[in-house]
Length: 291
Image 1 (tube, helix red, strand yellow):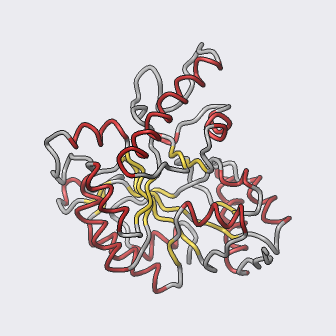
Image 2: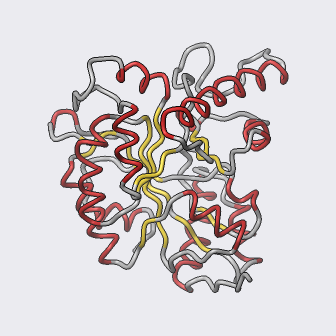
């Protein structure tokens, strides 16, 4: 039986304050999170989600979407020392659906796109610190680099064998970043194009997301339960389509705190905080409100 999980007082105030600040700044739609937190003092947990992309040693390549391995290690060490515990999407879904307890101070670490350097640099550090990470690869690129030109830190993507290797560790969870919607052409990511009918859009999203599900199942025996929107771009109806397909959570790139309750709707359009280079772990986590 589910027992009410009392939210840590610090985390609850942090969640509400961060949502209020973000809403005031126009960064995210925080009002609903504030209302949920205010009405659910005894059940729920605040969940910060950090968004990483590429991990490279070359300083000239580091910036908004690329951090050095030592900075990722610093983040892992900092979070551990501050009492945070890394969680997967499956664990969060189990909390919502079944009441399975989460750590008192959970945090989720996500990696978008599925770069090979995640395997080369981030994965060993995750194993060293016993940290769980969530990787969302683009299926098309995984197919492409599985056939050749693999294992270049600066530009290659994960291969299917590398994905299976990471999964077998029990520390890396894989979710979907689409099969081939990670583009900014006429269609921006997984969004609905101007003038496109609702039916035509739904067919495109189902076909692409379904293909990625099929490939993941075929190659690894596992089908993702969450969809990570390419570039964080979604449209009205996107979550509903994906939910009908069986996805139990979706992620944006909007920087906002998430209040996770027993309502399954709270798992859709989750916010994440981008982790850039050039700022220390302490300064970064203070900036997003973890300390």
